[in-house]
Length: 244
Image (cartoon, rainbow, N blue to C red; front, side, top):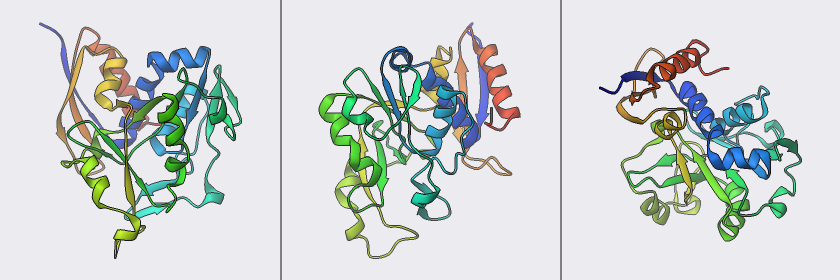
């Protein structure tokens, strides 16, 4: 019988596991050798940047929009610069999009994941902000789009239908900033895909939520010959609360 384990991940721990899985993606490994990786702003992406660069990053500053108790944005003067890698080495991200081709990778987080596996990103900027600035280029050229997103952001409603209805100028009141939504189409990496990239043969969620620091957690079943190794890896991540 195939070995089976059960694990629980808090949101920061999930971000670390997702980041480790993203690092193992074949398109990422290829681009690290020869190609460009653009890591857009986002708290999950901050963990990915740490995995790909080996340096510590202030997660709270490697972000644009975020949800605290309300929908908010990090002020421009507080944001860290976007990280771009060319052949595995950091380069200026300023005009890097001009160089990118279908062999390269953009990593973009999201705010929602619907039952059809479509991710959606909230947009508080009336001209689309960081998302509106590059998605046309990504989709036109066929650049690989990797979308890391925790299962805590799963919603029971269609992102496409949401995007048809909401919008900054359609909202009369909001807790924080009003937003619109853009659907994202690319390779979704949740904890499930990340665990498989880390050696599991199968993984699936069996529960969500918690208390006493476990709010937003996801509990998963992991199956495979490498289950014990994955359990040990997750235990190390938990011991450091996602900070590696």
